[in-house]
Length: 317
Image (cartoon, rainbow, N blue to C red; front, side):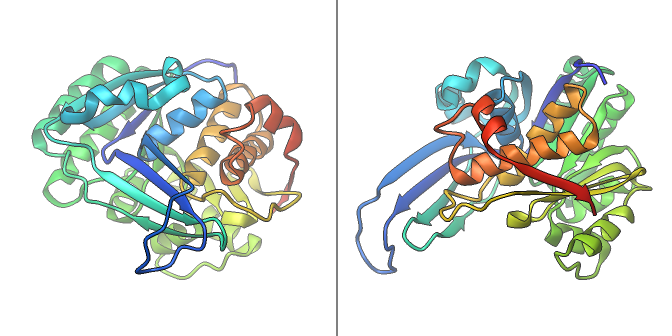
């Protein structure tokens, strides 16, 4: 495939990600943090950020809180020039999520707050926006949590708008929204992890290559491609022509943080796809980007350096 098309990330549940790192963290104690970072995030914006790190421009659509929208461009830092912001400003503040990392033990804790930006009015505004920014060359990435219940028909309408525009639809969510949108047959690529794959199929899938590939193949009638994250074991991609597994050739003792690794996996896969790579090279690229995120190299190295230094093995699953 030629290097054409625009990636549009669409997030209905954005967040400010606050990551606190310290040593020998203990409950009930007062301790100094070694480092704190505050960044605009959510799965969809994470994808745009990862693409920007690789030098690929994208459009970030979806929702953001009106009360802190002015802080968003500066929060994106050096990558903001690669991200075209087309977000609907919703009343209120964007939620805060907190990750605590004990750098001594390598353990993490993730504290999530509720998303209150999605409502009938903001989803109508987002639908109107998508009608103006999506075209047949777009890849529309719906990523992150999605409202269910009474609001779900409005969510489904967003997906249908992109499908009617003949865009390729990527779905990176979980729960009822994932199951119901998959049933439409509109989706080109889905990106579950092993746990989400188990939930979709209604049975436990063990994180073994053959089991994961076989489970992924059961979804091919509903999606054209299934990209499955396996954590430290790498990832598997399943298409109508076969299944491939990829993993890093060497392990690193200290993992900086696991939050967002799946989003970076997806971003690397999509960039390689748009650059004309076949599915195995796209899988390699995705795992390289996810590995860089896990090792903390996104902050210290360029994509070109990571592409040279991280070695990925890919073979038939």
